[in-house]
Image 1 (cartoon, rainbow over the protein chains, first blue to last red):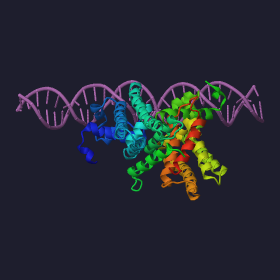
Image 2 (cartoon, protein in one colour; image 1 turned 120 degrees about the vertical axis):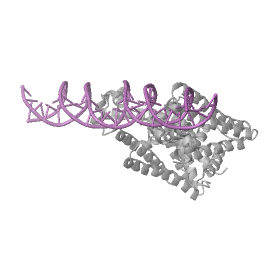
Image 3 (cartoon, rainbow over the protein chains, first blue to last red; image 1 turned 90 degrees about the vertical axis):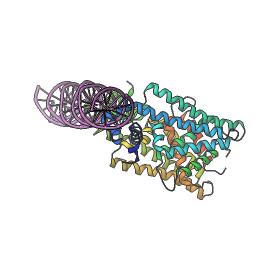
Image 4 (cartoon, each protein chain N blue to C red; image 1 turned 180 degrees about the vertical axis):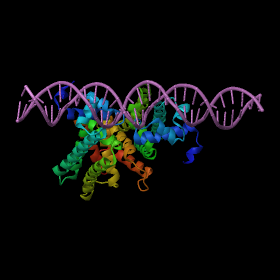
Length: 195
Length: 195
DNA sequence: TGTCACGCTGAGCGATCGCTTAGTTTGGGC
DNA sequence: GCCCAAACTAAGCGATCGCTCAGCGTGACA
């Protein structure tokens, strides 16, 4: 075991669930997997969490809120410079998807396992995320800084290349999350500039 | 039921598995789900397929081979024009990920459910796919047509935005697969051109 | 008409699933 | 020293899992 021994059991369970959901999927993970990874017996899970789906929701909610926060900060940091705003947004997004890669996977690939009310809450946050990206591009077009013929599609392409980092990225000394983030943010600016 | 009634049972089973794997995941799909969607009893699956994992492998293999074929055709169609070659590659890739979006999901998101020997075969095809994209960019750089400082990262960004289409795309009268493909291919060219 | 191969059913095997519950342990407040 | 709440275990519930298998029906061929 690691330093996780010192954390409260509730936290240890969430971290164990996070890891397992990320690399085996929600349905590929048993509550016994989670319990034993957290150093508890199978019944120990339910002292701290109502259900397996509830753990997924808690993790998914925290992950989505983190992304919304990052994008809103990026927006607030550069209120009058669309280029810097978009650059910072993509930088933060890619950084997060690389560095907290297991969080990113749960956020983007385990939505189908949420129940209906939980799914609705998450969908509202996802809508907000797309909206922030779209507005950043839109404002650059309005200011005449960006040249984009299809704002919505371009927003999807930029968020897509960023989100997909969570799928393929593996920690690497050469391709650090920071280097990736800078390069992807530069690419995003190319995507919104005239050819 | 649809016209699927006319197809041989083996094919019907594969199509049912495809659909279910795509929207509930491999572990979220039971062999009984597959059987009943194909109009068979639970035991009927094993007349035609050795195991559930074997069905996943067959689907994954066919999907990956389709992608390799599309990219190799794109390469052969424009052997001396890096811009047209890359444009065609991204166009084909996005078209496929939008149009055959359930195939794309199985291809990209169910790799972890494959057993070790099957996973190795698939990984070889995935390596080939990345190689084809990377070479297309590389040849443009060599020819002085593209301006790219990190070929590998750029290849990952371009394949990432294309692959991610499989995750979010839903059939839509306005955003047809064809329109998406053209727009994403244009964006890819922006990504490899000087700012 | 007899028969044999083949597609398929339906019962069911052993394992594992999410989750509950009775009971044990433990540590802080009186 | 006593007590109670909270943390946790071990056993086990009913359901469902992937998969097997004995047997049934049917169509092609002798």
